[in-house]
Amino acid sequence: MPEPTTTDTSAAHASTLETRERQLLELLAGLGRVAVAFSGGVDSSYLLAAALDALGRERVVALTADSPLLPRAERDTAVEVARLLGADHRLIPFDDLAIAGVVENSPQRCYYCKRARFEALRALVREAAEASSGEAVLVHGENVDDADDFRPGAVAARELGVRAPLVEAGLSKADIRALSRRRGLPTWDHPAAACLASRFPYGTPLTREGLERVERAESALQTVAGLRQVRVRDHYPVARIEAPPQEIARLAAPDLRRRIHDAIVAAGYRYVTLDLLGYRMGSLNEGIEEPGR
Image (cartoon, rainbow, N blue to C red; front, side):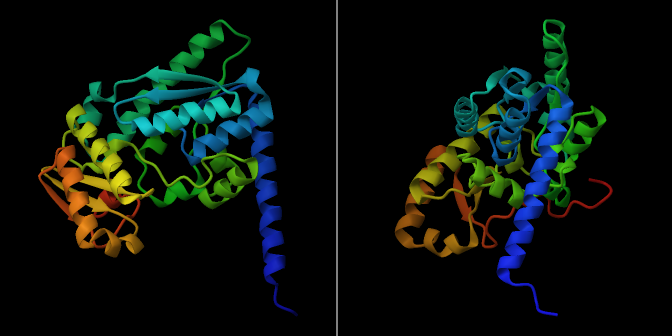
């Protein structure tokens, strides 16, 4: 029997992708009305676009928690993507730093954060239902690859009945990028994003000052070094830079190294280090053992 060709494999993948997309649209259509927990990232942007395709503008609302944990650049992206899609988009003021379980920054921080956020969004959805023709189902942008990382926030979502349509349709991050590109979404190739709290080691209390410091440092690093994917892990007064491994040699070159140092010191740190392993998602989860996560 002849081996499958590259063309055969590509065609099979495209067929599978189309099947999953069709399942997603049918699933969303079956919900009748949805409220999308919308960060403006790759996953939630595609979920919002798919919801609009399946249900129409009148039965979809995008809700963004405008929080100290959300980088301003990502909030601006959310606003712009919602505008491009013609979505009903609402920024909801939300102070995560009023939640003790978030400020304490234990390994369960994301659980407490997502639990409080989803409860607040669900209450808004129910209030809106009283003045409209029906209650929307709250959905969020979890994908099947998220199960590979430590995500206690997903537990909170399941407890509260927040649906994850991308997971239910079997869509991976690669699938979502491919479908987003086909759909013409500007977020299709955006780097992975995470809230600012993920830059702090567990057990380091979160403060508004610290969150603003790390946001300034990452913004400065992106400007000075021209990086799209970067993390500044906060070990104050030390800033630990995680950049793509292929960029490490360039960042360590004498001239750029000095400019990076000066920019991050100006952002509020005293010392600057470069992680030799480079960027990896959830690096501060390293060493957390199951089931005590």
